[in-house]
Length: 257
Image (cartoon, rainbow, N blue to C red; front, side, top):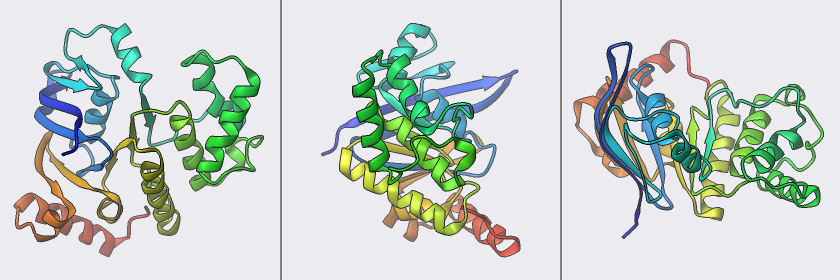
């Protein structure tokens, strides 16, 4: 039986008096890829930010990597937790003024306090090889395609060997072919390194293609969770509503990624 890497228990958080997520409970298991799906504005990204230690629960708690995050957790503790995670935000958050190599080296220098330039260079080249971008170390983000920038962002998040990788909408803005390449990269990296993955996405095709476990969020709550085979046979109203919404949007104008 797989161990639980992250256990969120009845977590709620809000902004300006409005609750964004309410009584959310969910688990991430070691070595699994989980996809948190739902329409825009349902609370997916807020949930990811909570797990990443960028927000604190107002109610409830998160048990992550043997540590507890709740309303009383101090910033120093959150920083220590973040150092054990890899996070890729929707826009990639690359530094435009830095080369690819400098971007990837940044967390090694300033989060891991590694200052041996030979070691840093070796680690950068190794992780670029793993994301199939060995020849772009000296290029700048503006010189790369959207898919290549996404790979660089993933490489930077993995260079310090995290236990959990968090990705926010990794295929948004990509053409379908590039999106599927990113999907396959996520699967391959998870299998190679054995870390757990949480992907926040509204891309049902992507989720069904890569996930071991699916979670569906509606209006700040987990409406459904299960494995892919359960999704395909589910008669749950939330599952039907989300799937039909994706079909409708694709039929009208198509979804890239």
